[in-house]
Amino acid sequence: MDQATHAHSRRIQIARETLVDLVKSFGFYPADSVIINWMKAAESVLAQRVDVEVFLEPTDLSKSDLELFIEPGRIYQAEQARVLTCLTYMDERIYSGIDAVQEALAKYEIEVKDVFVFAGDRVFSRECDEGCEPHLMHVEKKISRVSRESQCDSDSSVFIDAQAFPVVPSVEDLSPWRTTESAFVQHLLGQWCANTATVDIARMVVALEDIRVRDSILWDLANGAYEPVSVAESMSKLLPRLDANHGAAIATTAAICWWLHGNGAMANICIARALSDSPHYSLAQMIRSVLDYALPPEFWLASVNGLTRHECLTGVDVTS
Image (cartoon, rainbow, N blue to C red; front, side, top):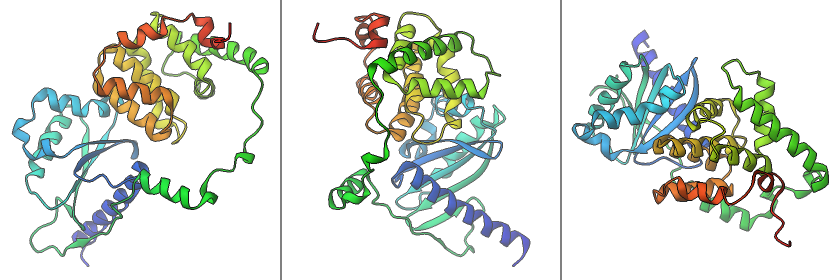
């Protein structure tokens, strides 16, 4: 095997590994999708998915469409992008759409590291030609949450053992902690800078996972304590550093801030991360719905401003 053939073979192997990782990350096979895997320091920081149709007719892609599409990569300060397309069957028009994306990325000095196309059970790269042997790959394409739910219904052993969790603290024990942590997050967001200590960021992430602390900070946002765009940018940059299942609160808060700022595209990306980490996170589900129905931020602001900050932090006593 000569050097060029070996390099091509290795690239196809990378394509296979990347798709397997994406399916694991998404929890399903992303059929009929264009996916950009944004990378920084050779590590993936965000996988962004969009329906493939618009990229099959790239002449319909306006400059603003492309700018909007690549904005997440700029927000995450990506250095490279790996572009993957999942098609039912091969359609050569997709390469024109990818070229349009690559041209837009070049303006921001973001390198397109790889271009891979998955069509049926075959893998293609830009280096493939007519003499290239078919590169085959089989991926389970029927993975869904429905099948996972069915598995749980038929086998209770796959449920998490409730006995593995510690005893929930009493409200009396939690109240002082909530007051302290809310004040800490309030101060941190007011003094945020690029070199904020990792230990302080970790403390904020844990604090915002408590709904009372989170709601007190959202009350601050609704009442103009911070600039939504500053908080949105800061929290969006945190997401690549958070393991799966630990980003819901941060991602939802970022989504709300982007929504308040008028950037629906980034709000949708952040809320997708929140629901990926925690599908049943109620605030994320609510924000998902208001974004789907294009409701204005005033809808949310009115509900928050119906409470005081103290009520958000301590909870409303419905019996009084």
